[in-house]
Figure 1 (spheres, helix red, strand yellow):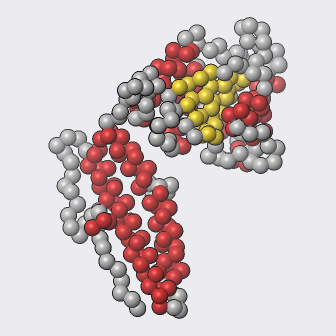
Figure 2 (cartoon, one colour):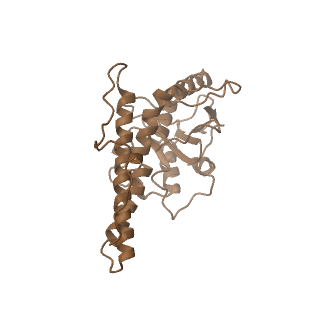
Figure 3 (cartoon, rainbow, N blue to C red):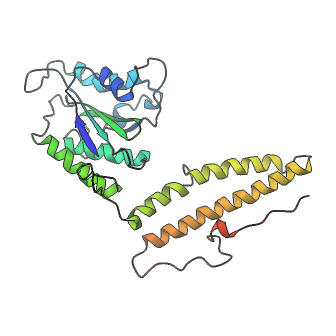
Length: 286
């Protein structure tokens, strides 16, 4: 994981455009999944507005606002280049991260950079956008809401590098410091997190597949043609096997999360957590 700082800018619009990899739009709203993290006081600040409907221009103007609210505030060097940009890039062979994991990275890097503090609602406005694979961009305004300039730490690069190493350990990512012998996370530690992504009942791939299969089955089982009804019954059975597979993954994750010597008993034949791979057979043709 490599955090990289950019030259400070006087306007958030070109910075956000660079982070998104495209020109900003006055018309199309920015996808909610793109903005993965933001400053602590934003909900109170935007109580009469809905950021979910904002365009990319709206987001840039939100970051720019302190420049207009505090027109006399300057940096210690006397300039008004208050827009600060950090991008964080993963190693090419790192796994894909979930939105909560990107949010965790953004919040921790923001704290390491000094632009965010727990409960700091009068601090810097900042957002984090995740618009490219293996990369997240933090964009902050160093003019705080209380009208002061947020001075960056003198050892900023060291702090960012140290936090990046901690994030690699916590998330099981590869460190660019050792390309010849990359850090290989303990699979027993990483497996429960990966299994949780697969079996997630809302966003997991198995849940999505099961929902589609169940919907199709419901539409086909009442069809007047026998072979179509048979297909619907087969889809019903497939949905049951997908559910059993999710349950089996849950049982496996429970075993991995148990303390040594306290693992629960393995599923017994007939248990709903029995692997779907062991369940075979089809309904007869009707």
